[in-house]
Image (cartoon, rainbow, N blue to C red):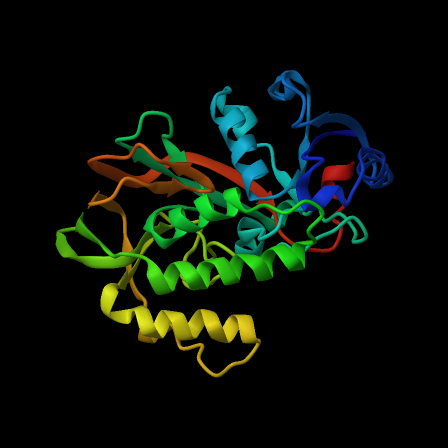
Length: 309
């Protein structure tokens, strides 16, 4: 019988699923189970266990924690496939991978449907050296900061997303643009921007698809730029989402996207984000590129027998 390692963030999704529920579902799919909660101080000790599959129950932040733990281990452990059960608020990584699972759906373990997730490397920061989702400057570091300061206990996922968009709208209306100097693949860009993002996945923030052509399996990143002069169009875009209308959803009218491999950014501001981590002491330049580290995820498919034999 195959061995499964369950890694569970019990606070993700407002604690919608309990330890016992997740263990029962995985065992019913034919696995022997080791379980660990990310609330445990020594949760990274799971790397000492034998496993054929990792079942990860949590949001984007939990995926990053897992990546950090795996990248510190020997190479073979990095390539144990991950079955992601998205329990967070935005679940941008799962959405970008086409994963829309919950505990009530069959667990797909089709080896032919494993997708490689190539990660990014960042240099120039003290504590962070890799990213899964992206690195950015401008309105999204501000949004991360504001949302951490305005959390509400007992909020549903839908309520939090709605509140996030309202906070984002106020930021977009009032954010003071910053100057950025960018060097990438022989191109130089300079200007005042509301947003500069280097994205590895399709979605950012509260499920905004700002990089629709991003591909986690390739060696490219998507540089997303919103200059100061496009503020009104961005405001209309966010307002249309809040209102639930399709009056203004033309993203191409305010977003510029370039496919890049290596990039250097100098930002005239103090904050940036690396995935969902807010970095407040940024000063100077950062360099980013793809690196050799990658994860492997199961994508949606019917149950496949091979891994259960």
